[in-house]
Image 1 (cartoon, one colour):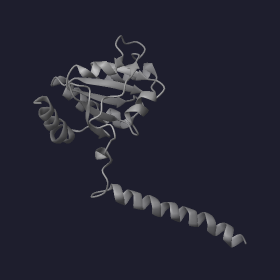
Image 2 (cartoon, one colour; image 1 turned 90 degrees about the vertical axis):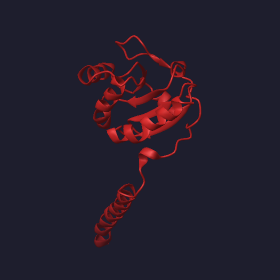
Image 3 (cartoon, helix red, strand yellow; image 1 turned 90 degrees about the horizontal axis):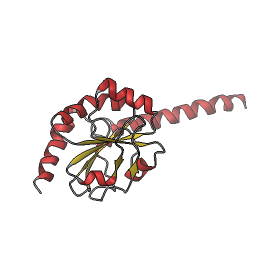
Length: 182
């Protein structure tokens, strides 16, 4: 009886380890790239929403703001390490004249403002998604996520994970050029 009790936890640990190894193998080179997973939101209008600004800022964000031209919508949080990694690339895009809106996900206002003060503010407007409800409506399941929204307020592309120079060059630049010609 004692041998069975000792053997059971070892079996569970082994099974979990095997499942985790299979998962890592699938997402590794040649595996699934979560940044390109399809979204039910592609070619659909942005969800209707109206977010208050982060406490301490003047402008919030609402769905109508996204119909003023081609733009990016970035869902981020100060507590999100990949958001910190991608931030210089968002700053670079903003310096090039790309309009970027932010949805700040379940963050403390002081932390979000400190993040922007220390790293720069690439956002034209930021809405505070304090409950996470708007992020759910957008279909967010990881942070950061960035959406390309066209002039009519339709979502044209979704990127899961941090933006990099490769993503800017290989995805956003060509898509933005193609969409702006329509």
